Image 1 (tube, rainbow, N blue to C red):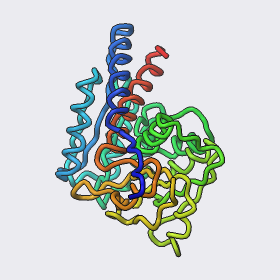
Image 2: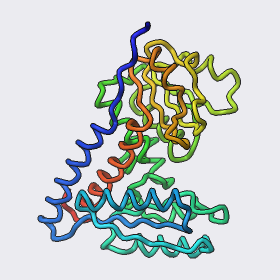
Image 3: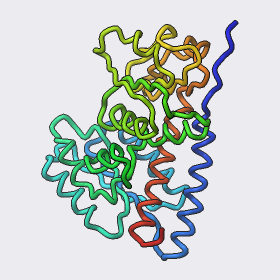
Length: 284
């Protein structure tokens, strides 16, 4: 039997980060008289989105972050949504803004995201944040990519000179995580579901990021022996993008689903909300 990969426990690290965020939020509230505040915006009543927003608000409450929830009807127009987000961007009592997506097929999500003030973009979804990630400037990382980098750091994965292959090209996961890896001196290859002979590329990866949202899309033969495998997939039934049982006999480190990348996303959101509040309250 080949040795099994070491599991990268995102749940444990996330607990540590959340505890740190809670202490910082308490200190900030005591020092300034103002608690950090995250506004969540939800269009319509999609059950999964409602559940995600409720979870995020509950996590905020546990760490001392106020949450302001704005629920909009499914018929909300792009102009109305942009107006709502602009008002939150101009409200000094709100320190972070999260637009739950997808917002609906009739909504221009990019226009809505761009209405978020950069200093309140704690979910890292604006063009400003992507540019900051790309150029190594101050700004907020997209939460899942930011959580992935924290997880790699925690497990002492040296990215300099490594070949990182990202399978997926979404604006809030695949593209930004590649930029963050490039900023750590990794050599980055972007792939996706239409890449010709995908396995020939993934088998060259020292670090493989699966972010294509297809259950068990990457199989054992896609994995280079000894690779670090980060499964950022989220599919029905708590199934990742990687065939976990096959991959764990080839990888050296691997994230489970659930309990790997997911908890790190929430922890990064909470951390960045406290960061945003501290900056806006001049308490850095």
